[in-house]
Length: 401
Image (cartoon, rainbow, N blue to C red):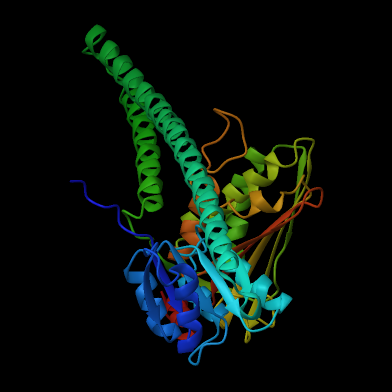
């Protein structure tokens, strides 16, 4: 005797008893062996609870529920990261509406049926189609995740190799200076030049500090160390970083600074802000292989209604904004959408780890700010960092110190 395979689980969400019974009969015609295990809900809230707590092979949901509409139901169960709901969904409605249909498909529905045209064939075809489309997209998502995992592993290998290379260079300098000291002392123990020894010690101390700085930056990136925040003027931080920018950018990139006339006090880790600025500048340099112009501008911005100003996701408040604009090749929308992902890079093997902009993103988030990118192919790129303006009492305290 063999165990019977479990029946596919179907959820019907409709506040009309007759309509629910109709769908049930189309799925399991009277007088036949049941082909599906059917669960019913008469409101959107109960339907959401069921979908999020149990596994269903398909969900039929009416557009007009007494506590919400079907699109709101889809929004509440939709996972934007995967682009899927927990289960395949077929939307039901009393009349055709193209806008509703497009909204339903946008938020995870696989098919759309009009109640007046329902039949056993229509319901079962929609069920099969929804399951096939759902599995197709889920399979595509799994393949993308596997590819991203492979890319991350490759980038981790590159990062590890880069760190090992940097530390090896630092240790080479330390060991070389120690060897020279040892040779000098062993060959002339009675004639040791204090200035020579001091110079070697200072060199090794500088190298050790460089190693400690590398470790500190890695710890900040991995959130193992908090930022050392203090109230500073954003314009002064940019001025202090300019000299560090000129060397990696080279002579083919012109730098222009358009600083706001007013002071822009912000509570940040000035060193990490400088690193974020350098990372954005290096990204700009790579987008301008034949040279170009990098513009760094600052301004104070008050956001009252984020949606009205096109800054959805940015909380209302007063911000110091720094914009980094290049005249480079720009980015396609799919690249710009992933530009802050750790280990994401469009460069070839050995040319980049994909961590620079991810570190900038991490710094901004730890500083309670926001970072955006505006780019399109052939039109350059602008990164904008929004940092909360420090309260007046914090600014006064900083000036007092």
